[in-house]
Length: 98
Image 1 (cartoon, one colour):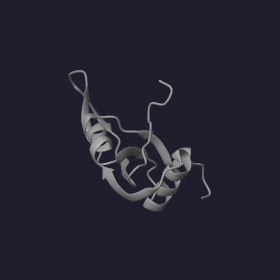
Image 2: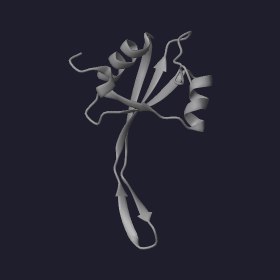
Image 3: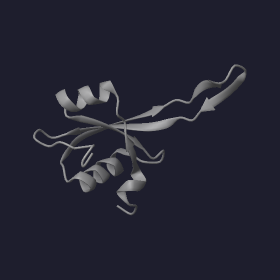
């Protein structure tokens, strides 16, 4: 891999759904670089947390409209999300040291 894993994985997605998936399905969700593919995400997760990745799913999340105040319309940028399934027995501690 030519780039550092931090250039591929931007941050974890921490929601109720992602916490449920981590607990019951051993799946972790990350915001990844727009140009990243499944192979790069798999290598980055394995390198960063020393785990075995079973499957990677990627979804492009669309841009959305928003509002600032009453009359100002804004556009929120789209982003790419990766859902990483780990092999049984492996886990990632996203809040290590907190």
